[in-house]
Length: 236
Ligand code: BV8
Image (cartoon, rainbow, N blue to C red; front, side, top):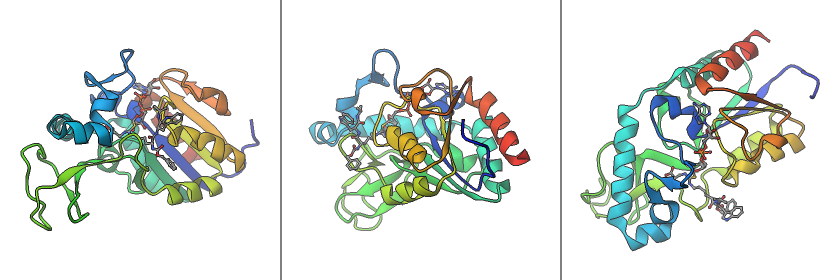
């Protein structure tokens, strides 16, 4: 365990586990299905090209679930950290919900896109979108019917990787919350942070694929572990 020097720069990575207690399903159920669909069918550009109506319906359903969900104590604790921590902070989330923002966090980076955003393939405009896309609405900017979910699918480049790599290069603490460590490049962030001299901490319900890469792993639910950890940081 690295000596606990003053912490001035924290990077947090969150996954579906932090939103589980808000009622949003995580991905890696035993059957490897996403909401009863094979991943390739609903979370790849090929799947979208093959059956756009199915994929639009899949994300219309997830968008409605996001809007019906509420932040839980873990999201709210990170909001408090964002308000009260004097140093640098970046919350990189793999989640497409807006529960970090509704929990009060501001410095949030959605590396896999956002469920409440639509991306026009005709003019490249992005729009906040709370309703359905399956019924083929026209793009508010160009009028074309060409909007897709603003989501990073498998095989697509995650958003704002440069900012993430810069943050990992200067972090002195990297905390992973509620992620299985199954998907790259997010699953590799802990090694990058560690190689740059950061301490690394995992808060998760169970051991993950990356647990051996962390200085410390605490097992439990996010709504228990995250508020306690935020208290610890704000006291130190
Ligand atoms: C890319 C948006 C090129 C969609 C998502 C072979 C080897 C290595 C890599 C690859 C490979 N073959 C292909 C790849 C690349 C691929 C990949 O990693 N595949 C995996 C399957 C092997 N990655 C990509 O394609 C990525 N793009 O590589 O581009 C590139 C990259 C960089 C530089 C140059 C080129 C793009 C991947 C993005 C896919 N989109 N999401 C949507 O949401 O609909 S992925 C999706 O699954 C999530 O966003 C997240 O990233 C990922 C994992 O999900 P988790 O969030 O971890 O959730 P999960 O259910 O898995 O786990 C939940 C955890 O929470 C569990 O551990 C559980 O114990 C815990 N938990 C549960 N309840 C609680 C809890 N914890 C606390 N409290 C609780 N109450």
